Length: 255
Image (cartoon, rainbow, N blue to C red; front, top):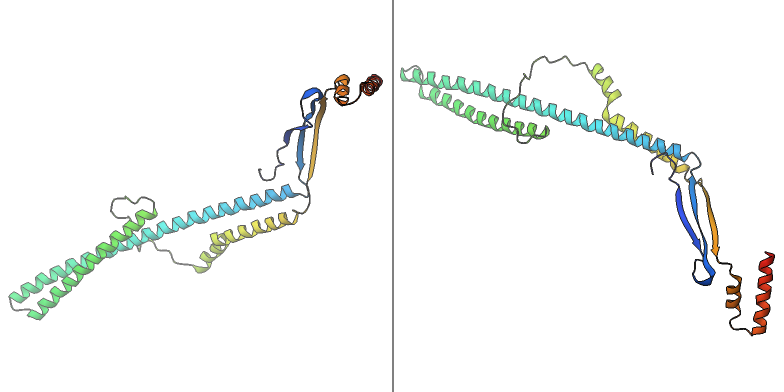
C-alpha cells in the first residue's frame, strides 16, 4: 500500500447453500468492500514516509561527501608522496656529486679515507630512502585508484603543489558552516524527525478503522412446489402426501 493513500477496494464473490438437484443453486452474489482509515493515520503515514525519504537523502549526501573527502585525502597523499620522492631524488643527486668530488679530492690528497667513506655511506642511506619513498608513492597511488573506483588506473602522478595557494585558516569562519551544514548533524536531525513522526503514528494506531461493504445477492433456489412436495412425502402414506401436496399448491398460489 502506498503511504498516505486509501487501501484498494475489495471486489469479491459470495455464495451460500450452493447445491444441485431439484433445489437449484442457492444464494449467490458479489460484494464491494472499502476500508476507511480514521484518526488522521493517512496523514501521519505521509509524514513518516516523508521523514524517511529526507533521512535517506541526508544519508546519500553524507556518503557523497565522505567519498569526496576520501578522494581529496588520497590526492594530497599522492601529491605529498611524489614531492617527497622528488626531494629525496634531488638530495641523492647532490650526494652522488659529493661522493665524486670527495673521491677526486682524495686522489689529490685533499680528503682522507674517512671523509670518502662518510660520503659514500650518506649516499647509500639516501638510496635506501629513495627506494622507500618510491614504494610509498606507488602504494598511495594504488589507494587513490581504489578510492576513485578505477583499480586498473595506470601508475602516474597528479598535478599541483602541496604548498601552493594555502589559505590562512580562520577557525571561526570554518566552524560556523561546519556546525550549520554538518552531515552528521543533519543526519541526526532527520533521524529525530522520523522517530517523532513514527511515535505520533503509533499513538493513533488504537483508533479503529471503518469498513464499508455493499453488494448484491440473489437466491437462485428453484421453487418447483411439486418436486419439493414429492421429496418431502417420499416415506409418508399416499393420503398424507396428497394432503401436503394440496396445501403446498394452495400456499404457492397465494404467494
